[in-house]
Image 1 (cartoon, rainbow, N blue to C red):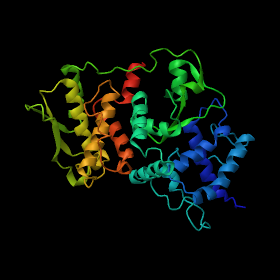
Image 2 (image 1 turned 180 degrees about the vertical axis):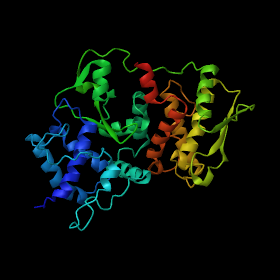
Image 3 (image 1 turned 45 degrees about the horizontal axis):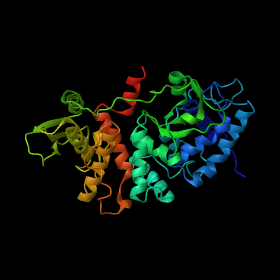
Image 4 (image 1 turned 120 degrees about the horizontal axis):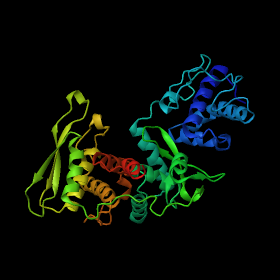
Length: 386
């Protein structure tokens, strides 16, 4: 049996309370879904050994909450685990928790800060272990799912596909209630996504909610199937705000565009300046796909690291794979907005190993490109439902 250290328990209790307040609705009993907190922590990098040492403290708090001795929300008078200034739910803070002197190791030893490299490694391990995307057909199924789920950012859509590929529409319990007068059914299991301002959130499939009938156009967003030059110009204005110089080329049909580093960031900090060229003689939809493709190269790290944009250095990626990754991003961004790029067969024509495809980088980059062009799922959702 594990020994409960009261100092550690006070710290862990504050953390659990922060988690409960961040991800559960205070109107409902959170204890039946308490395991969701552990799922979150495993996603954040908690090892089996760390969980073994954490679990007794977690189980004690949950049991006390079930008995009404402590609370995950407004603390009761006799809730001795409550501190006057409990820490906000933050995995990085959790992984740095101090412990009592008699503990030989940190309660969460070995985890450290969850860098983007570690985050990607965790997702890669999940994909590799489940062999979810080991064929072009499986990858195409994933892309089709992300295209359909327009109300969710590409990276979160991939997380949802991993958890529930049959999902049709998803939203938080708050959004279901406020926007559609619907609530999760009793016993409905939430799905984990990354929150816009971090760290995580839970969403529910529409089939797991009940209430008012859903409007036919509930998840309809504007598309750009008939994209005009004026509308395309709006996207360009959004791009230029991100220290990207645009250069319209007077070129023949065979030239689409390119991107290059123009001015490195000072001291490796802040955003570098880039120049992106596109063929001004192409129709607007083609120009849109070109800009998305070239932006993808930037955010995929194909031009090197950009710390101001949290872009890693991936210049060692083989050229053919660079083009496939950028085409996947452009394909996703275009298709999610009602455009059909010419390069739909990019994946079937790829002669390299599918295991070399960095799906993590592709999805995070698709997020970034939609955001830079002013068409992120978050932005369109808010514009279309207010």
